Image (cartoon, rainbow, N blue to C red; front, side, top):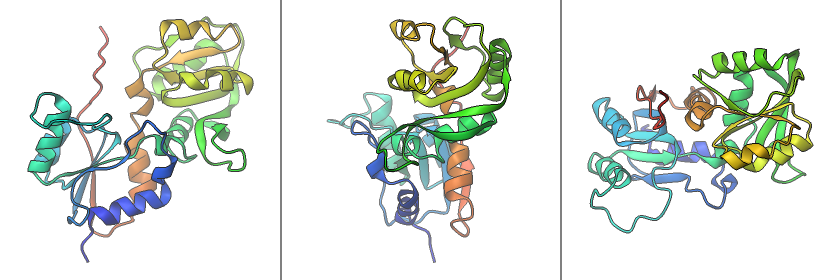
Length: 264
């Protein structure tokens, strides 16, 4: 029996429902025929033109990305920008594009748990629950190190474990790091919750200059970069959501580094 795009999307949505995405998001099947057969999937963080070219080369009928390639409404499809070109190329080559974004951020086995596991943090829980009656759904995570580390030691470990070249951070407070809060992607909206729950450090990305002042010497903010904080999302998809679920389905991870930010 052939596996179809619909089989895969239904499986993903049974574990990570689209109803869990934020109101501004556009998760789900963005391009493609639900009834089309799939034998090979390409996983990525961003479904860019280069990733779609890789999918064509590797004969993948479906691309599953974390970030939706179409985030705002498209009024035209004439190749005027990379979003339009990506969608047009995918349609031309019968490649389905699926996004699993803030709904994957909002489950306790998703993006944030992967960061926590990389940092070997224990006693994890959701940082900010969507519904206080449901413990497993919400934004960010918080947990405790097995052994406290000095701030410099923790930052050195963070660089290695998360494979980052540099970390933007607020003033170090001269305290040991024990309780750690994280949010993959742009997590500025969770800073006060991290402080409220007595985290020693908050690891996230996309903090603006003025947001760094909001730490007010109560917590260390560590901005590791958006791509860097979510770079292991394909592992979540492969190992947690798709592994051994469909007989004969080949699951590949992109070789394209899609981070648009470079450091000199």
